[in-house]
Amino acid sequence: MASQAGAVEPVSQLRDGRTPVADRIRDRIRKARGRFRANDNIAAYLEAGELEQLRLEVAEKVEDLLQALVIDTESDHNTRDTARRVAKMYLMEVFAGRYGAQPPVTEFPNVGRLNELMIVGPIMVRSACSHHLCPIIGRVWVGVMPNEHSALIGLSKYARLVEWVMARPQIQEEAITELADLLQNKMQPDGLAVVMEADHYCMKWRGVKDSDSKMTNSIMRGSFLKNPDLRREFLSLLAGRTK
Image 1 (tube, rainbow, N blue to C red):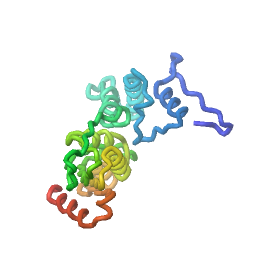
Image 2: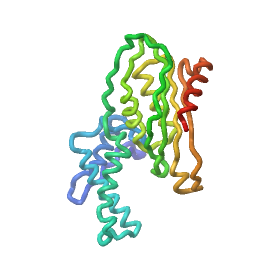
Image 3: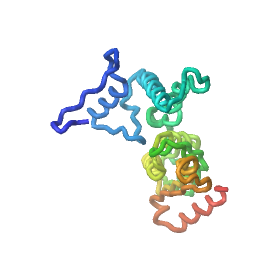
Image 4: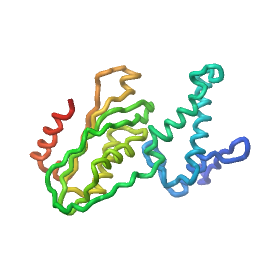
């Protein structure tokens, strides 16, 4: 972060004089004029071994949080190893889409010149709200209208790409936009539709504690947006799969 004079703030140091790996990564991203928002992927800025170093640093910070919550992690056998487990969960599992490279996806030419509606889903979604870091659990459906020049991807690859995009702290509206952009760029179809329905635990677990509310939103592009008959066909076929 630059000061008013334009100088770059020095990164902090650990007691032994080393620069925390989080600060090294952050400094590297800033020098490259990149971003590190909650739903950004920063894998390109990580160097070998840094993810494990970051996990250890996060565990220390989580231990500080538990101490600040007045939880006795020394004598409480249930929380003695909680900091390590939470750090691993965030970096390797629920936020893994921030730190891991995009999964490899083999693209196939549309040799058969397919031009009929394809629907993939429901695909299980596990994400987290960036406001409270509470779980977002739901399902995604993808509709594709290919053309003869479209690239096709294997069925399992949809699930891998969904997981990669969703395993970050974010809001649902931005998450499906990013997923739609990714699929559009990879496949170049005539039309693309993405529908996501999810439970938000920032409403179920805290706040209003409403256990029944869900959020559903959709993105329609190309022929799905221009052709109301195609859009109706997609949504009618979806209706039988949402129960």
